[in-house]
Every structure is written in C-alpha cells, then in structure tokens.
Image (cartoon, rainbow, N blue to C red):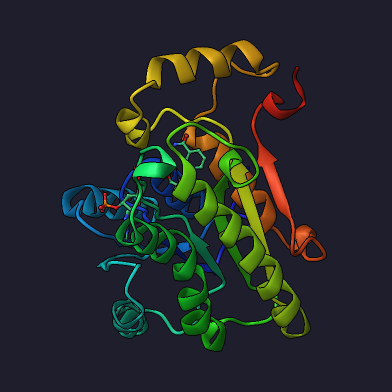
Length: 251
Ligand SMILES: NC(=O)c1ccc[n+]([C@@H]2O[C@H](COP(=O)([O-])OP(=O)(O)OC[C@H]3O[C@@H](n4cnc5c(N)ncnc54)[C@H](OP(=O)(O)O)[C@@H]3O)[C@@H](O)[C@H]2O)c1
C-alpha cells in the first residue's frame, strides 16, 4: 500500500474497539500518527497505541466521553500536548439503546443524539482551528439513517442527524479546504452486535442479501475511510459513501 499518509495526524473517536480500532490501525499503517479517544476500554486503547508505536508512529490514547462538549474540549487540550495539528478526524464512537420506539424516553434520546451526532459538531469545533487545508472530517454512520430497523429508532434518528450535520459542515468548511464525508456501513460483526436480540438473524439475513458478502469486516469500513483521506478525494465532500457489499441494491 505504501505510506501515502506519512506525516499526517489522525484523531479517531472510539478507537479502542471494533471499527474505530480498525480505522486507527489502517491510518497508522498508511503513515499517520494517531490519537484515539476511548471511553471505558483503557487496556484495549493502550494496546492499539502500542501496535501503532511498533509501526513507528506516535500514538496517544485519551479517555473522553464524547457526549460531553466540555470533555471533548479537555481531550483536545491533552491532544495538543503531543500534536500541533490534526489532518483527519473520524467521529466513530457511538452507543445504542435497542428498544421499540414506544419504550424510549427523553433520556435515551439525549444519550443517543449527544453521543452519536452532537459529538461530530463538538469535535469539528475543536479540530478545525488545528486543521490545515486538505484536512478531512469523517463520520461513521449506518444504513439505519434511512431505513427502519427494528429496535433501532433512536440510533437511526441519531445517524440521520449525523449525516445531515456532515453536509452542513461540508458546506461551511469547503472554503477552508476541509472535506467532510460520512462512511455508512452495513452489518459488521463487532461487539456492538452482541446487544442485538436478533444478532444471528441479522447476520444471516445480511449474508443472504449481500452479493459481495457474506458480511463486512471492520477493515472494510476502515478502507473506505482511508480512501476518503487520500489527496485524490479532495473534491469529494458532503457525501455519504455506503460500504455494504451491495446489500442495499439487492432485492
Ligand atoms: N457494527 C456494525 O454493524 C455497524 C454498522 C454500521 C455502522 N456502525 C457504526 O460504526 C461505529 C463503530 O461501531 P462498532 O460496531 O465498532 O462499535 P463497538 O464495537 O461497540 O465500539 C464502540 C466504540 O465507541 C466507543 N464509545 C462509545 N461511547 C463512547 C463515548 N461516550 N465516548 C467515547 N467513546 C465511546 C467505545 O469506547 P470504549 O470501549 O472505550 O468505551 C468503542 O471504542 C459506530 O458509529 C456504529 O454506529 C457499526
């Protein structure tokens, strides 16, 4: 692959596990120094950093709850102790409350929307002053932003908000030479899927309908993030790139 992103710095939220971990490692292997924000998984976050360091990258794990704007601000204070600028920010961390819509409360709404959508804006506010032209802000979404998935009501709503917000940021940040895009993934068998009551059914149905399947790996999603970070992608902004193995186009 070569180190096409050598000398760049990336910050990835939820970089301790799953898709965020794969993104951190992919961008690290492509040459980036990497900071990851994590919430609870301290050991996993440190392990990602030590892997990155064995590749010769600088790596920093910062504990931060991305649903809290003040904590994001503090996380950037910590980030600036090691890094002067940030080229790529990936808003990947998310949580879910898997319940029928009729059982969801305002508290659930706030948790989902603040962690999964508001965080993108708060990250952008902190990152943009440190981001040179050519910088990229990316957010990780799911097919639930446009589809009704059982038990997924507030997560789906948060992903729809995330995608809309990304378009507004793309419009505002275009004149600064910063691109903003979303990578929307189909089903990936990470820890997150363990909380789906219908996990087996979900995976089987996904495999059945996915021409390039059977399912996706975290690395498939990380690869799309990498592509959107390349200089060649500079005029791609404000869009959602779907990585689903062809699930959506299959009847
Ligand atoms: N898995 C799928 O099928 C799928 C499909 C489409 C899109 N996605 C999206 O891909 C992204 C990653 O999903 P995943 O499957 O990799 O999830 P995951 O395995 O459950 O990992 C979630 C990550 O987010 C972090 N996180 C959660 N809440 C946080 C908070 N408040 N502050 C900071 N970090 C927080 C976790 O950190 P700690 O472990 O340190 O707490 C963890 O690193 C999400 O946006 C998800 O919606 C997933």
